[in-house]
Image (cartoon, rainbow, N blue to C red; front, side, top):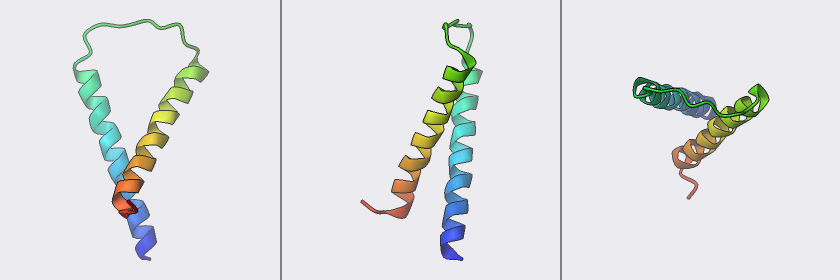
Length: 65
């Protein structure tokens, strides 16, 4: 039960941080930059950032350092 709660808390925290970062970036975006990138590449970059954030937060929340 405790591991499930910790896992849910880390996912909730990750979601909250991602939303804050997106809000911060999008609220200050005043111009559009066109980068020749396919939709698959964009999705890969976004998923990579989410996975890295999840592992970093998981590392700090579990205290295995």
